[in-house]
Image (cartoon, rainbow, N blue to C red; front, side, top):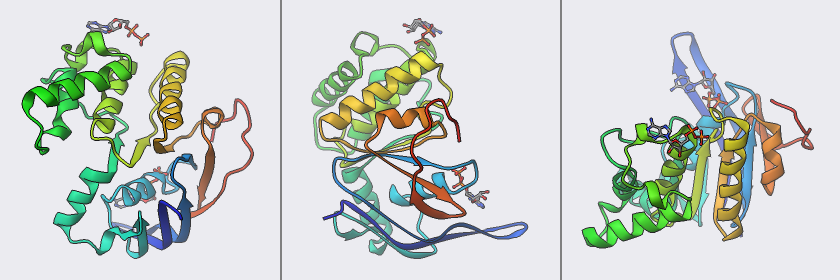
Amino acid sequence: MSLIKVDHVSKIYQGGEGAVYALKDTNLQVLQGQFLALLGPSGSGKSTLLSILGALNPPTEGKVFIDDIDIYGLDEERRADFRHEYIGFVFQQYQLIPYLTALENVMLPLAITRHSDQTQREMAQKVLEKVGLGSKSLRLPNQLSGGEQNRVAIARAIVNDPVILFADEPTGSLDTKTAKEILELFQALNKEGQTIIMVTHNLENLAYVSHAVQIRDGIIEKAPQPVVGGVI
Ligand code: ADP
Ligand code: ADP
């Protein structure tokens, strides 16, 4: 059974210059344990698809099932509960809170849980250790390098043990060496069973994933064979 099923989904944005068809009657299935790359040129609908899969953005038409739940059939409140239980999101610009330490940033998703403050601290510290930042947990984001900030964002996304981890262009602003380290971290999480869906422009990143699809003209297709060194 598929963990994720995208069933005839369309997304139409109403802009100043008329309707934009970001996704056109498209389908996708993702199995538990996959590390899926989502390719496609700028403007092709990758972020739209990621936000639809992440229960953040209702499609105009069609349905999205995750774990057999029709996620846009849920009311807003239940969909928020669903997001907390199922979804971890690493945003492109990380979106760390600048005046909170790495540890406090990672604790944020735990605030609504019933764990004690002490337990929340211990959970956040443990996840920061897992991403290699155990010794820097009391630093503020601006005291960390770009790659380290990315790791904090990843730690925050996984601290609740989500069913699916989403990452929007996670290596876009990193140098080659740091990007490689982040991809290796995702790969290690995937080996532990974490399902991951990652938007990327860079075909070199396909070396790290288990599956890849591309979006063309709002339709999801099988990705071409990776071209080493290539960039979409
Ligand atoms: P990508 O992530 O591949 O760059 P997006 O999903 O951001 O693509 O965008 C797909 C298309 O939808 C683009 O034409 C973009 O301009 C348009 N679009 C995205 N978000 C909005 C929005 N909130 N309002 C209007 N148009 C949008
Ligand atoms: P990277 O090679 O990972 O991009 P940098 O060269 O940016 O790392 O930083 C090297 C080390 O210096 C890192 O361990 C980071 O924690 C630390 N560092 C980077 N920027 C700052 C800062 N503004 N204040 C304090 N420490 C920093």
